[in-house]
Image (cartoon, rainbow, N blue to C red; front, side, top):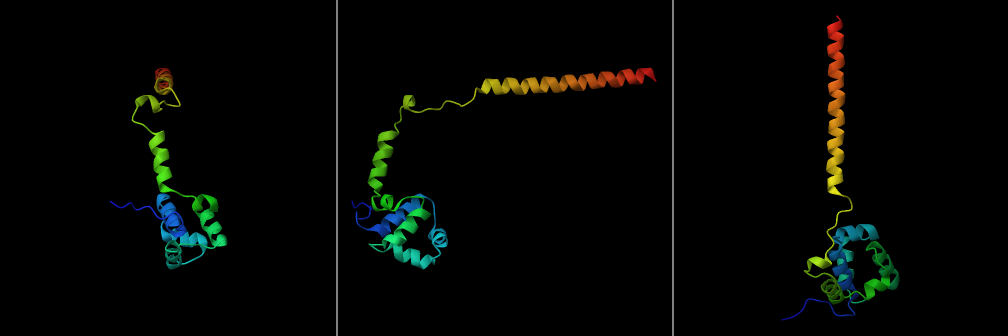
Length: 131
């Protein structure tokens, strides 16, 4: 079974893969670079890219040129595989607030509103009794 990872020296394929991982289309990258989509396609099929152009592309992708040159999809999968495990102890699902406090605060707001409405109705009744 063959892998689909690009050869280590093929900068164009690295650019293409980084762009895809970022969810960016060739048209978007072309627009940021002031190039045509066809030119971006040609760059992505090139084994080498000029240093100045690589700097511009890397900046558009939110990376450094060095990060693009050293990009390795296998390294990313290794990092993910070594970082995330299916152990509940390693996952942090803690809220940044106490949900019970939020419920109590909402309840208190509603009680206060109902008390003000009740007071308003009492005042209306007193005014009507006085007429």
